[in-house]
Image 1 (cartoon, rainbow, N blue to C red):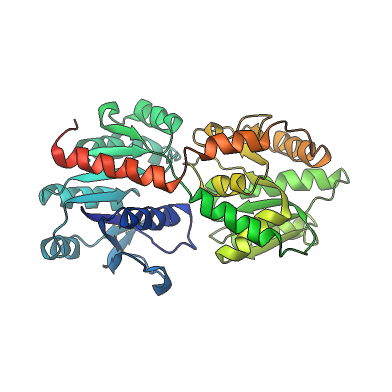
Image 2: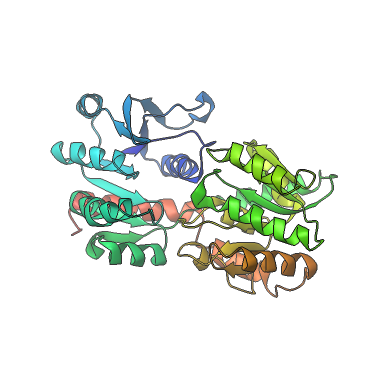
Length: 370
């Protein structure tokens, strides 16, 4: 198949959605498909492997990108594709769907998270955007059953939905962890956060919970990997709570360095306010690490409370602090980390997931969808 992937951003330094698009494109290419990625954000030339990448211009509205309709139209006329796969972002996605509909290009849309927003933006997203996506997409991929159910309640058309999760290359990643583990000689640290430094990722809540523990004399250490709009605010929060000696902002780190961080930490924390199925959780599980995550759709389908990690209510800093203290003071508290991780990861391998995505493309092309 000649497949077009469209995403606002492609640089893997930005976040998990970008990594997802790259990994999916690589996996589809290995299956023999002809894959092209179209984006309007800058990206490192090193990412281009077995697929083509094109960039066209965009405008910005309220911090959101709008892909140039004129350039997208010209691109679709010049390069003929059988199916388009849109990785949605508000306004950006609606614009793309209008253009692909006009060009009669079947389009599968992935909604990578719940996209919770404050009123009135949430009202507009629920009442307009989700219905727009339902009407113009051939199929809509949600990353977990919980995310799908929530979005359907908010306005997404159930008959258009299919659940296909995020994924990792499980066997390859485990091999890398084994090799990297033999080389490590650095001291371990207590907690690891990996993600874009923005409000929805809950990193401020994590720092507040850590500050609560420090005031009780529990001097746990934390490494924060990633960058984003909250970087400056987090530095001030770390300084104001006298955490500078214990918390390190590492910024973006290369993949091999990130693998080392997973191996050196005792616990991985994902305190997001809303999420999809984050690659960070899957990578941590492949490393055999316990997780503390928010009890929200997506994450609570990966973590069995008391099995391979602990679930906490988002925004509850007291409960998050208690969960951190529980796992760090009682390392044997969880009773089945490896067994649970193995069962979960079996469903989240790119070999399985890419075949499922390709099956949806074929259904769309054959007209075997609503």
